[in-house]
Image (cartoon, rainbow, N blue to C red; front, side, top):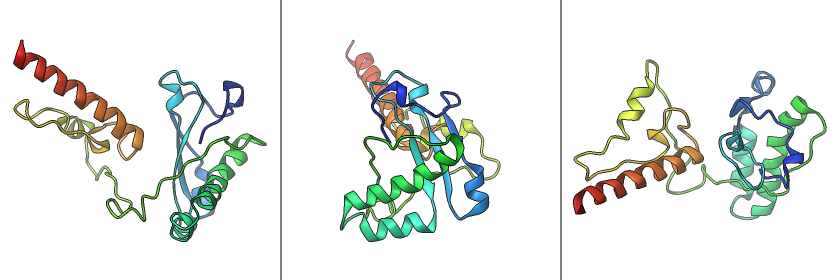
Length: 172
């Protein structure tokens, strides 16, 4: 969800992740908000809302392919409701996008998770190149931002730099 200017920011700038525990207690809605704007300068303020609920799943099945505009509007309403409960009368985002994880034939809603006893170092091991020939990337390699699109993005950037560095070593 994107807003126009820094004046529109109503959410906390720190930490970079926050949630509304009340929603989870009162309903089947589980939602976590990511604030990547706290980590780097951006031209437009934005937050990611990662939500799970039977209602969101049904909305995706009904509208994500047949009426994408309606789909994004309905998902935005769900994501904004806890924000309004937390911060009062806040403006709607000027731009909203929603993925289709549950109906995407290549992912069907999958992402990594930590099992009991999992240590962050286990994910960091996935970032180590194998013989400087195989470089892994993706949200599963991130200790902090696993399960997120921005984790996958930053991981891809990191792996790309490692590939470039390995090529420079080979040719110089």
